[in-house]
Length: 360
Length: 128
Length: 144
Image (cartoon, rainbow over all chains, first blue to last red; front, side):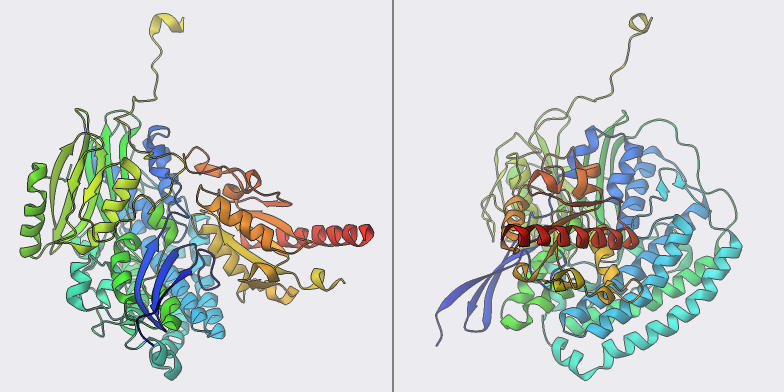
């Protein structure tokens, strides 16, 4: 019974996918021989709007590239403009951006853990993960005014300061969150059924991960220590940073990296709260960007690139974004080859696809 | 301006990619942008131990470019995207979507030279 | 047949949204907001659905998908446009690939504003949609 190939379309509307992506799965019996992705269901073309919005307004659009990694997109864009114009943002703003960035990493990883549990049919675990995520979103809302789209970053710094009293309150509230996350992560890393579903599935060797350009937890789950936070942007220079890696090179490894990064982010936030310097949170911005800049930072899903080019006017001439999901697609294609049809949804989820990001 | 870009000829693209691969670099991104003097810049960015290297070719619209999928298999996502948004043709891609990777309402929506700035300045005598 | 109004099933489709509204729709299902206590279930199958929840400004490739899904939902059905993009195109209305709102493709009954939408607003919108669903059902009965 070999040799008979069938093509099964998967998506764009599929119960396990919160977002539309389409895969043509070439199967031989139950085995996937090849998976061909096709995207474009969320392509809006927002990069073309740079010539209609001035660079300071475009921060809002950059933030809406994706609703999950929104904060990191806005801070990466601002970082690019500031780099072009030679603006040095105040230290307190640098720390606050790092703080919000790490909070959004926790929110994004908890979101992913929930969706992943749901894809495996473990609904109560999904609810538990999202329950913890609400306490993170509460802090986001209390400090920025927005739950998922914050609008707090601007060229030259940030819009809001957080009082030191509130910061220490945040620190205290993290204790409870940390305990709850410990309980949650225990299930993800030790549960027999969950391990059965993810261990050895979606194999990606370290050399393949590197050669295919995988980034973020996909690369780190395959033992590649690749994390832009090692490049000393924002406050990571002062905080010192060591990436978390796992070497099982499968779905379990990617899950493990995200679980451990939750606690790494909590540690970073605690250090930020202790070390945050006093001072202003923004500087006045004069003039227009001129030249080109390659801004990158580490999103929850991996390295994001904002390429910015200006010509001395209010409008940028070019803006291109390369998001982590796009560069993880070749790795996904390689993981899917040879897997069983029933494992396709969960393997797709292990790369934490963010289609909104991927297609802009 | 944190980019040091090496301008190369289109014939050197495959060779440069192979060299980068041999030296253990990772392909970060291929960026296509309108060039200042007309045509388009395609910038290849590579990374090794978090240090970036950029190479750039400048091409007239609709020209053919050799694919670097031979060295970096993951390049197909960028090459298909540049094909769909700018109209360049890449020869030798491992997966060629033939223009269906990103479907757009306008064909090749980014295929325009540097746009005129939209900020209009009012001359003093007109203002009065 | 008032069971549909007491337990409406939702079909959610992301028609080129940025995800912000989508994750808030999911958040509304989870313990803090818990719309499932109203009998609302998020289904993946259009043939099971009563209320069609759409996010995003609808791009070129989604037009057909959206129409297909709408046709597959049995009558009576209600469409809820969630978020400002789904209502009018929002910040993306000037993009070349965005049609500018769900109502350019299929009829919309309830608009929920916000960028991104808050779960409370979403619940309000769905409750309004249940009312519209009930009206449409009564009208269908009367025409029988």
